[in-house]
Length: 202
Ligand code: HEM
Picture (tube, rainbow, N blue to C red):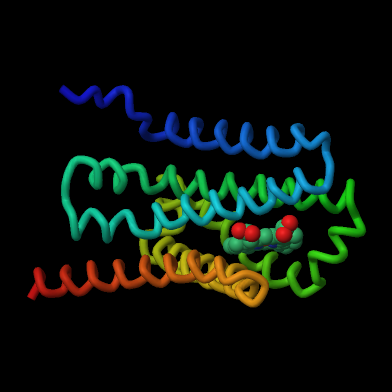
């Protein structure tokens, strides 16, 4: 028999994700004694964990609609906590960027162009908005229509941010085409699920 209590859910799931992310990034930075390589590794690793967590939240509903079952129901029921896990991962991304700025300003100046603060800042604004409005009280305060508007815009701003932040690195390494392809596959999945929902309603 499956022991459901062994699988974290709700706030406990978020705590597991947050603790794992903090341990991962902290470990990478400490293992290199605060050196530039460890800090850069933590920045890159958190960008990737952010993408994975974002994709789980982004596709949860579509996955459940296309493949209903207990595992996909668990994914859908915990979508909010994966979304908050994504926000936490990106908070750690920001923290590691801050450390790069403080400890290795020359490398920071080489890697971060001023325009990144505008594009990245807009994405961070939406990540903060989505995280702050992830709670039932915020849904009630905003009203379901406004809440939906904020979340729809925010989710697409973040999707586009991932396309650009990965896509701009493709000339340096073709491997960055993989996350871009995964992002488009996730989009295709959502479109397929939406089409199926329309057919079911017709
Ligand atoms: C002001 C905001 C931001 C700054 C200053 C920033 C800075 C950086 C830096 C310096 C790196 C490269 C680390 C290295 O090569 O050693 C990086 C990597 C990356 N960042 Fe950010 N970032 C910001 C916001 C964002 C946002 C909003 C996203 C996506 C939603 C994002 C996604 C990525 C990705 C995908 C990578 C590449 C990771 C990899 O190599 O696999 N960043 N960021």
